[in-house]
Amino acid sequence: MSLLNFKEGLIDPSGRLSSWRGKDCCSWAGVHCSELGHVTKLKLSNPYSSNPDVLDATAYALRGEINPSLLDLKYLNYLDLSFNDFGGVAIPNFIGSLKALRYLNLSGASFGGSLPSFLGNLTSLRYLDLNSCFGDSNKNDLHCLSTLSHLKHLNLGTVDLSVASTYWLEAVNMLPSIEELHLPFCGLSILPPSFPLVNFSSLVVLDLSNNGFNSSIPSWLFNISGLEYLDLKSNNLRGEIPDGFADMTFLQNLDLSANSLIGDIDDFTAGLSRCNNCSLESLDLGYNKLGGFLPDSLGGLRSLKNLCLVQNHFLGSIPESISNLSSLQFLDLSENGMKGTIPRSLGQLSSLVSLDIYLNQWEGVITEAHFSNLTSLTYLCTVLQKWLGASRALDWGLGGTLNNIIFNYFYVIRQIRDSSSLKDFLEDIIII
Image 1: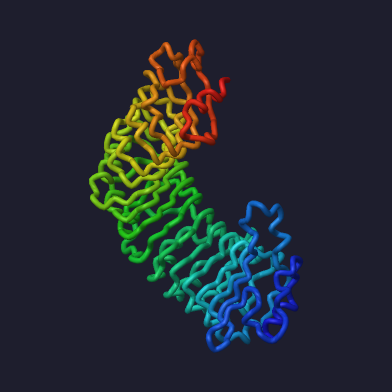
Image 2: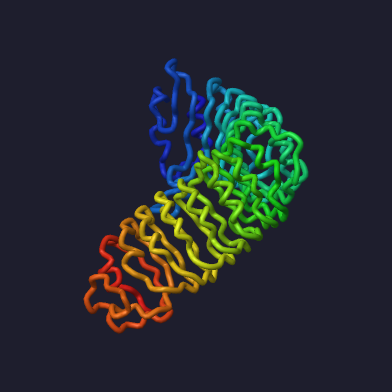
Protein backbone atom coordinates (compact mmCIF):
# COMPACT_ATOMS: atom_id res chain seq x y z
CA MET A 1 0.00 0.00 0.00
CA SER A 2 2.85 2.40 0.74
CA LEU A 3 4.09 2.32 -2.85
CA LEU A 4 0.57 2.53 -4.26
CA ASN A 5 -0.08 5.61 -2.14
CA PHE A 6 3.20 7.01 -3.40
CA LYS A 7 2.09 6.33 -6.98
CA GLU A 8 -1.30 7.96 -6.35
CA GLY A 9 0.39 11.30 -5.68
CA LEU A 10 2.38 11.23 -8.91
CA ILE A 11 1.51 12.26 -12.46
CA ASP A 12 2.97 9.71 -14.84
CA PRO A 13 2.36 11.01 -18.38
CA SER A 14 4.32 8.25 -20.15
CA GLY A 15 3.06 5.33 -18.06
CA ARG A 16 6.45 4.49 -16.57
CA LEU A 17 4.70 3.09 -13.49
CA SER A 18 2.14 1.04 -15.41
CA SER A 19 3.63 -2.18 -14.01
CA TRP A 20 2.76 -1.07 -10.47
CA ARG A 21 -0.21 -3.39 -10.00
CA GLY A 22 -0.82 -6.67 -8.22
CA LYS A 23 0.71 -7.82 -4.96
CA ASP A 24 4.30 -8.54 -5.97
CA CYS A 25 5.78 -5.04 -5.69
CA CYS A 26 9.29 -6.46 -6.02
CA SER A 27 8.57 -7.09 -9.71
CA TRP A 28 7.47 -3.52 -10.39
CA ALA A 29 9.60 -1.23 -12.55
CA GLY A 30 12.20 0.66 -10.49
CA VAL A 31 11.50 -1.29 -7.29
CA HIS A 32 14.22 -3.46 -5.78
CA CYS A 33 13.83 -5.73 -2.79
CA SER A 34 16.00 -7.68 -0.38
CA GLU A 35 15.95 -11.46 -0.20
CA LEU A 36 13.42 -11.10 2.60
CA GLY A 37 11.08 -9.09 0.38
CA HIS A 38 11.73 -5.69 1.94
CA VAL A 39 11.77 -2.73 -0.46
CA THR A 40 15.33 -1.38 -0.38
CA LYS A 41 15.66 0.68 -3.54
CA LEU A 42 13.51 2.98 -5.65
CA LYS A 43 15.21 3.77 -8.98
CA LEU A 44 12.84 6.21 -10.63
CA SER A 45 15.19 8.49 -12.52
CA ASN A 46 13.90 9.79 -15.85
CA PRO A 47 15.44 7.20 -18.20
CA TYR A 48 15.41 9.54 -21.20
CA SER A 49 17.09 12.57 -19.61
CA SER A 50 20.41 11.99 -21.39
CA ASN A 51 19.12 10.28 -24.53
CA PRO A 52 20.03 12.45 -27.55
CA ASP A 53 17.41 10.69 -29.67
CA VAL A 54 14.57 11.90 -27.42
CA LEU A 55 13.60 15.45 -28.33
CA ASP A 56 11.58 16.16 -25.17
CA ALA A 57 12.72 14.11 -22.19
CA THR A 58 10.41 16.10 -19.91
CA ALA A 59 7.49 14.21 -21.45
CA TYR A 60 8.71 11.18 -19.51
CA ALA A 61 9.25 13.02 -16.22
CA LEU A 62 7.25 12.13 -13.15
CA ARG A 63 5.40 15.08 -11.63
CA GLY A 64 3.13 15.76 -8.69
CA GLU A 65 3.54 15.12 -4.98
CA ILE A 66 6.03 12.90 -3.18
CA ASN A 67 3.81 11.11 -0.69
CA PRO A 68 5.14 10.63 2.87
CA SER A 69 3.99 7.01 2.66
CA LEU A 70 7.64 6.32 1.79
CA LEU A 71 8.26 6.54 5.54
CA ASP A 72 6.62 3.11 5.83
CA LEU A 73 9.51 1.62 3.83
CA LYS A 74 11.75 1.05 6.84
CA TYR A 75 14.48 -0.66 4.82
CA LEU A 76 14.65 1.90 2.00
CA ASN A 77 18.33 2.77 1.54
CA TYR A 78 18.35 3.99 -2.07
CA LEU A 79 16.17 6.73 -3.56
CA ASP A 80 16.69 8.12 -7.06
CA LEU A 81 14.15 10.64 -8.37
CA SER A 82 16.58 12.49 -10.61
CA PHE A 83 15.54 14.42 -13.74
CA ASN A 84 11.85 14.34 -12.98
CA ASP A 85 9.84 17.55 -12.59
CA PHE A 86 8.41 18.42 -9.20
CA GLY A 87 7.43 21.94 -10.20
CA GLY A 88 9.58 24.01 -7.88
CA VAL A 89 8.20 22.71 -4.58
CA ALA A 90 10.60 22.34 -1.66
CA ILE A 91 12.14 18.96 -0.92
CA PRO A 92 9.62 17.36 1.49
CA ASN A 93 10.62 17.48 5.15
CA PHE A 94 9.91 13.80 5.65
CA ILE A 95 12.91 12.94 3.43
CA GLY A 96 15.02 13.84 6.47
CA SER A 97 13.38 10.98 8.39
CA LEU A 98 14.42 8.26 5.96
CA LYS A 99 17.26 7.35 8.27
CA ALA A 100 18.29 4.19 6.40
CA LEU A 101 19.12 6.09 3.18
CA ARG A 102 22.64 5.54 1.90
CA TYR A 103 21.98 6.87 -1.60
CA LEU A 104 19.92 9.98 -2.46
CA ASN A 105 19.80 11.46 -5.95
CA LEU A 106 17.48 14.40 -6.62
CA SER A 107 19.59 16.00 -9.35
CA GLY A 108 17.72 17.93 -12.04
CA ALA A 109 14.37 17.17 -10.41
CA SER A 110 13.16 20.81 -10.36
CA PHE A 111 12.76 21.38 -6.66
CA GLY A 112 12.53 24.85 -5.16
CA GLY A 113 13.60 26.42 -1.91
CA SER A 114 17.07 25.99 -0.53
CA LEU A 115 19.39 23.27 0.69
CA PRO A 116 17.37 21.75 3.56
CA SER A 117 18.99 21.50 6.97
CA PHE A 118 17.28 18.15 7.62
CA LEU A 119 19.74 16.50 5.24
CA GLY A 120 22.03 16.46 8.26
CA ASN A 121 19.74 13.82 9.79
CA LEU A 122 20.63 11.32 7.06
CA THR A 123 23.78 10.19 8.80
CA SER A 124 23.99 6.91 6.86
CA LEU A 125 24.33 8.67 3.48
CA ARG A 126 27.19 7.58 1.24
CA TYR A 127 25.98 9.29 -1.92
CA LEU A 128 24.22 12.67 -2.24
CA ASP A 129 23.54 14.28 -5.62
CA LEU A 130 21.61 17.54 -5.73
CA ASN A 131 23.18 18.81 -8.96
CA SER A 132 20.86 21.30 -10.72
CA CYS A 133 18.22 20.48 -8.15
CA PHE A 134 17.12 23.94 -7.04
CA GLY A 135 15.93 27.15 -8.65
CA ASP A 136 17.36 30.57 -7.83
CA SER A 137 17.78 30.23 -4.07
CA ASN A 138 20.99 31.77 -2.68
CA LYS A 139 20.42 30.91 0.98
CA ASN A 140 22.12 27.55 0.96
CA ASP A 141 23.93 26.71 4.17
CA LEU A 142 26.59 23.99 4.21
CA HIS A 143 26.67 23.47 7.97
CA CYS A 144 24.19 20.61 7.67
CA LEU A 145 26.94 18.53 6.05
CA SER A 146 28.99 18.25 9.22
CA THR A 147 27.13 15.17 10.46
CA LEU A 148 27.51 13.18 7.21
CA SER A 149 30.70 11.44 8.25
CA HIS A 150 30.13 8.45 5.94
CA LEU A 151 29.49 10.52 2.79
CA LYS A 152 31.68 9.45 -0.14
CA HIS A 153 30.07 11.27 -3.07
CA LEU A 154 28.73 14.84 -2.95
CA ASN A 155 27.47 16.76 -5.97
CA LEU A 156 26.05 20.24 -5.43
CA GLY A 157 26.68 21.49 -8.96
CA THR A 158 24.85 24.79 -9.80
CA VAL A 159 23.53 25.09 -6.23
CA ASP A 160 24.15 28.72 -5.27
CA LEU A 161 26.60 28.58 -2.38
CA SER A 162 27.65 32.23 -2.51
CA VAL A 163 26.69 32.79 1.13
CA ALA A 164 29.04 29.94 2.05
CA SER A 165 32.02 31.37 0.14
CA THR A 166 33.97 32.17 3.28
CA TYR A 167 33.68 28.74 4.90
CA TRP A 168 32.90 26.18 2.14
CA LEU A 169 36.34 24.57 2.36
CA GLU A 170 36.09 24.22 6.13
CA ALA A 171 32.65 22.64 5.75
CA VAL A 172 33.63 19.98 3.21
CA ASN A 173 36.88 19.33 5.06
CA MET A 174 34.72 17.85 7.82
CA LEU A 175 33.72 14.96 5.53
CA PRO A 176 36.43 12.41 6.35
CA SER A 177 35.18 9.73 3.95
CA ILE A 178 34.62 11.94 0.90
CA GLU A 179 35.92 10.47 -2.37
CA GLU A 180 34.16 12.62 -4.97
CA LEU A 181 33.38 16.31 -4.50
CA HIS A 182 31.57 18.18 -7.27
CA LEU A 183 30.99 21.92 -6.70
CA PRO A 184 30.90 23.48 -10.20
CA PHE A 185 28.92 26.66 -10.89
CA CYS A 186 28.32 27.26 -7.18
CA GLY A 187 29.32 30.94 -6.96
CA LEU A 188 31.93 30.18 -4.31
CA SER A 189 34.21 33.08 -5.40
CA ILE A 190 36.82 32.48 -2.66
CA LEU A 191 39.57 29.87 -3.03
CA PRO A 192 41.61 30.10 0.19
CA PRO A 193 45.33 30.53 -0.56
CA SER A 194 46.24 28.40 2.46
CA PHE A 195 44.54 25.89 4.71
CA PRO A 196 46.13 24.49 7.88
CA LEU A 197 45.05 20.86 7.68
CA VAL A 198 43.50 19.24 4.62
CA ASN A 199 41.44 16.20 5.61
CA PHE A 200 40.92 14.73 2.13
CA SER A 201 42.89 11.50 2.42
CA SER A 202 40.28 9.58 0.39
CA LEU A 203 39.47 12.24 -2.22
CA VAL A 204 40.00 11.14 -5.83
CA VAL A 205 37.69 13.53 -7.75
CA LEU A 206 37.52 17.30 -7.21
CA ASP A 207 35.50 19.59 -9.47
CA LEU A 208 35.58 23.28 -8.58
CA SER A 209 35.08 24.57 -12.11
CA ASN A 210 33.21 27.73 -13.08
CA ASN A 211 33.31 29.48 -9.72
CA GLY A 212 35.27 32.63 -10.67
CA PHE A 213 37.78 32.44 -7.84
CA ASN A 214 40.06 35.14 -9.30
CA SER A 215 43.11 33.89 -7.40
CA SER A 216 46.24 31.80 -7.88
CA ILE A 217 46.32 28.01 -7.56
CA PRO A 218 46.66 27.34 -3.81
CA SER A 219 49.40 25.13 -2.37
CA TRP A 220 47.03 23.08 -0.16
CA LEU A 221 45.72 21.35 -3.28
CA PHE A 222 49.00 19.47 -3.58
CA ASN A 223 48.45 17.87 -0.19
CA ILE A 224 45.58 15.86 -1.69
CA SER A 225 48.02 13.21 -2.81
CA GLY A 226 45.50 10.62 -4.02
CA LEU A 227 43.65 12.93 -6.40
CA GLU A 228 42.94 11.41 -9.82
CA TYR A 229 40.64 14.04 -11.36
CA LEU A 230 40.97 17.80 -10.87
CA ASP A 231 38.84 20.34 -12.72
CA LEU A 232 39.58 24.03 -12.12
CA LYS A 233 38.48 25.43 -15.47
CA SER A 234 36.79 28.82 -15.88
CA ASN A 235 37.86 30.31 -12.57
CA ASN A 236 39.98 33.28 -13.68
CA LEU A 237 42.97 31.69 -11.98
CA ARG A 238 46.09 33.87 -12.23
CA GLY A 239 49.84 33.44 -12.03
CA GLU A 240 52.04 30.59 -13.20
CA ILE A 241 51.28 26.89 -12.99
CA PRO A 242 52.88 25.67 -9.73
CA ASP A 243 55.48 22.90 -9.68
CA GLY A 244 53.46 21.05 -7.04
CA PHE A 245 51.52 19.09 -9.66
CA ALA A 246 54.60 16.88 -10.02
CA ASP A 247 53.77 15.42 -6.59
CA MET A 248 50.27 14.37 -7.66
CA THR A 249 51.38 11.01 -9.03
CA PHE A 250 47.87 9.53 -9.28
CA LEU A 251 46.45 12.42 -11.31
CA GLN A 252 44.81 11.20 -14.52
CA ASN A 253 42.78 14.21 -15.60
CA LEU A 254 43.80 17.86 -15.13
CA ASP A 255 41.71 20.70 -16.52
CA LEU A 256 43.05 24.25 -16.03
CA SER A 257 41.44 25.68 -19.16
CA ALA A 258 39.73 29.05 -19.55
CA ASN A 259 41.74 30.84 -16.89
CA SER A 260 44.37 33.60 -16.96
CA LEU A 261 47.47 31.51 -16.28
CA ILE A 262 50.77 32.91 -17.57
CA GLY A 263 54.37 31.84 -18.14
CA ASP A 264 55.82 28.82 -19.89
CA ILE A 265 55.13 25.18 -19.10
CA ASP A 266 58.76 23.96 -19.03
CA ASP A 267 59.03 23.29 -15.29
CA PHE A 268 55.47 22.01 -15.13
CA THR A 269 55.93 19.31 -17.79
CA ALA A 270 59.49 18.54 -16.68
CA GLY A 271 58.27 17.80 -13.17
CA LEU A 272 55.49 15.56 -14.41
CA SER A 273 57.75 13.72 -16.86
CA ARG A 274 60.30 12.94 -14.12
CA CYS A 275 57.64 11.01 -12.24
CA ASN A 276 58.13 7.31 -12.94
CA ASN A 277 54.50 6.53 -12.20
CA CYS A 278 52.91 9.53 -13.92
CA SER A 279 49.43 8.45 -14.98
CA LEU A 280 48.18 11.73 -16.52
CA GLU A 281 45.86 10.88 -19.42
CA SER A 282 44.14 14.20 -20.09
CA LEU A 283 45.70 17.67 -19.87
CA ASP A 284 43.71 20.76 -20.85
CA LEU A 285 45.51 24.11 -20.63
CA GLY A 286 43.49 25.76 -23.38
CA TYR A 287 42.31 29.38 -23.34
CA ASN A 288 44.98 30.78 -21.04
CA LYS A 289 47.88 33.20 -21.53
CA LEU A 290 50.65 30.62 -21.49
CA GLY A 291 53.62 31.07 -23.81
CA GLY A 292 57.15 30.12 -24.74
CA PHE A 293 58.26 27.11 -26.73
CA LEU A 294 56.69 23.72 -26.28
CA PRO A 295 59.29 21.79 -24.25
CA ASP A 296 60.76 18.41 -25.17
CA SER A 297 59.62 17.17 -21.76
CA LEU A 298 56.08 17.18 -23.16
CA GLY A 299 57.01 13.87 -24.76
CA GLY A 300 57.66 12.44 -21.31
CA LEU A 301 53.96 12.41 -20.48
CA ARG A 302 53.63 9.00 -22.04
CA SER A 303 50.17 8.19 -20.72
CA LEU A 304 48.52 11.20 -22.38
CA LYS A 305 45.44 10.52 -24.47
CA ASN A 306 44.18 14.09 -24.66
CA LEU A 307 46.30 17.25 -24.93
CA CYS A 308 44.63 20.61 -25.44
CA LEU A 309 46.68 23.82 -25.64
CA VAL A 310 44.29 25.83 -27.80
CA GLN A 311 44.34 29.64 -27.79
CA ASN A 312 47.50 30.43 -25.85
CA HIS A 313 50.69 32.22 -26.93
CA PHE A 314 53.03 29.32 -27.65
CA LEU A 315 55.89 29.80 -30.10
CA GLY A 316 58.09 27.78 -32.41
CA SER A 317 57.70 24.23 -33.57
CA ILE A 318 56.06 21.08 -32.33
CA PRO A 319 58.83 19.16 -30.50
CA GLU A 320 60.11 15.92 -32.05
CA SER A 321 59.41 14.19 -28.73
CA ILE A 322 55.70 14.32 -29.56
CA SER A 323 56.20 10.88 -31.13
CA ASN A 324 56.64 9.41 -27.62
CA LEU A 325 52.95 9.98 -26.90
CA SER A 326 51.89 6.70 -28.44
CA SER A 327 48.50 6.71 -26.66
CA LEU A 328 47.56 10.25 -27.76
CA GLN A 329 44.10 10.43 -29.33
CA PHE A 330 43.26 14.14 -29.30
CA LEU A 331 45.74 16.95 -29.96
CA ASP A 332 44.70 20.60 -30.19
CA LEU A 333 47.37 23.26 -30.73
CA SER A 334 45.14 25.66 -32.65
CA GLU A 335 45.07 29.46 -32.35
CA ASN A 336 48.55 29.97 -30.91
CA GLY A 337 50.33 31.72 -33.74
CA MET A 338 53.12 29.16 -33.57
CA LYS A 339 55.72 29.83 -36.27
CA GLY A 340 57.74 26.71 -36.81
CA THR A 341 57.75 23.28 -38.36
CA ILE A 342 55.55 20.25 -38.01
CA PRO A 343 57.91 17.32 -37.29
CA ARG A 344 57.64 14.08 -39.24
CA SER A 345 57.50 12.32 -35.89
CA LEU A 346 53.89 13.53 -35.63
CA GLY A 347 53.10 10.86 -38.19
CA GLN A 348 53.98 8.13 -35.69
CA LEU A 349 50.92 8.83 -33.56
CA SER A 350 48.88 5.90 -34.81
CA SER A 351 46.26 6.32 -32.04
CA LEU A 352 45.52 9.94 -32.98
CA VAL A 353 41.82 10.47 -33.74
CA SER A 354 41.63 14.27 -33.84
CA LEU A 355 44.31 16.78 -34.85
CA ASP A 356 43.70 20.53 -34.76
CA ILE A 357 46.63 22.81 -35.63
CA TYR A 358 44.62 25.61 -37.22
CA LEU A 359 45.62 29.30 -36.99
CA ASN A 360 49.36 28.84 -36.65
CA GLN A 361 52.08 29.97 -39.04
CA TRP A 362 53.64 26.66 -39.96
CA GLU A 363 56.79 26.53 -42.05
CA GLY A 364 58.49 23.86 -44.14
CA VAL A 365 57.21 21.15 -46.46
CA ILE A 366 54.51 18.66 -45.58
CA THR A 367 55.28 15.14 -46.79
CA GLU A 368 53.50 11.81 -46.68
CA ALA A 369 55.58 10.92 -43.63
CA HIS A 370 53.64 13.48 -41.64
CA PHE A 371 50.40 11.54 -42.09
CA SER A 372 51.26 8.04 -43.29
CA ASN A 373 50.79 6.28 -39.95
CA LEU A 374 47.85 8.33 -38.68
CA THR A 375 45.56 5.41 -39.36
CA SER A 376 43.06 6.32 -36.64
CA LEU A 377 42.63 9.95 -37.72
CA THR A 378 39.00 10.99 -38.26
CA TYR A 379 39.25 14.76 -37.79
CA LEU A 380 41.80 17.19 -39.20
CA CYS A 381 41.75 20.94 -38.93
CA THR A 382 44.70 22.85 -40.33
CA VAL A 383 46.00 25.73 -42.40
CA LEU A 384 48.80 25.37 -44.92
CA GLN A 385 50.43 28.33 -46.61
CA LYS A 386 52.52 26.48 -49.19
CA TRP A 387 52.47 25.17 -52.71
CA LEU A 388 51.53 21.51 -52.31
CA GLY A 389 51.97 20.28 -55.89
CA ALA A 390 53.62 16.96 -56.71
CA SER A 391 56.38 18.98 -58.32
CA ARG A 392 57.07 20.45 -54.88
CA ALA A 393 58.55 17.28 -53.34
CA LEU A 394 55.12 15.91 -52.47
CA ASP A 395 55.31 12.56 -54.14
CA TRP A 396 52.60 10.76 -52.19
CA GLY A 397 51.78 8.35 -55.00
CA LEU A 398 48.94 10.59 -56.12
CA GLY A 399 50.15 11.07 -59.70
CA GLY A 400 49.03 14.45 -61.04
CA THR A 401 46.20 14.87 -58.58
CA LEU A 402 47.83 17.81 -56.85
CA ASN A 403 49.96 19.11 -59.73
CA ASN A 404 50.05 22.91 -59.96
CA ILE A 405 47.33 23.47 -57.37
CA ILE A 406 47.99 26.32 -54.96
CA PHE A 407 46.71 25.61 -51.45
CA ASN A 408 47.29 29.19 -50.46
CA TYR A 409 45.93 29.71 -46.95
CA PHE A 410 43.20 27.11 -47.00
CA TYR A 411 41.15 25.93 -44.12
CA VAL A 412 40.12 22.31 -43.74
CA ILE A 413 37.59 20.80 -41.39
CA ARG A 414 37.01 17.26 -42.47
CA GLN A 415 35.49 14.10 -41.07
CA ILE A 416 37.55 11.38 -42.72
CA ARG A 417 35.35 8.36 -43.36
CA ASP A 418 38.20 6.19 -44.55
CA SER A 419 41.23 7.40 -42.64
CA SER A 420 43.44 4.81 -44.31
CA SER A 421 42.89 6.38 -47.71
CA LEU A 422 45.00 9.51 -47.72
CA LYS A 423 44.58 9.76 -51.49
CA ASP A 424 40.77 9.96 -51.26
CA PHE A 425 41.02 12.48 -48.45
CA LEU A 426 43.26 14.83 -50.41
CA GLU A 427 41.17 14.48 -53.57
CA ASP A 428 38.05 15.54 -51.65
CA ILE A 429 39.73 18.34 -49.71
CA ILE A 430 37.82 21.60 -49.37
CA ILE A 431 39.61 24.65 -50.76
CA ILE A 432 38.42 28.09 -49.68
